[in-house]
Image (cartoon, rainbow, N blue to C red; front, top):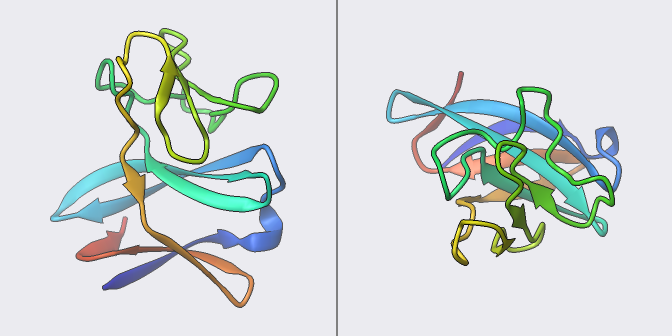
Length: 117
């Protein structure tokens, strides 16, 4: 298992997000980390309706109320905890989750074969 540092735990407040990239089998993967209700969750940054990033490159993944993740291209809403599409053209599909670990104040991506990009 490879571990890649994403951010210090204290660097992300509830309702905030950060984008990051990593390599999987030589291919760059766009991803993001959120903090929601005190817990961290990470997903690949690709909408399940169309293969586009949810944000506009500005690492803003939450809606205004900070209760759902939103695809800013067409407005699909995803639940922050499980990534499931709850509204929009995604038909109940879910974002691709990434395994993370929080240890000694640092949030890590944990994925077999992942490399820093």
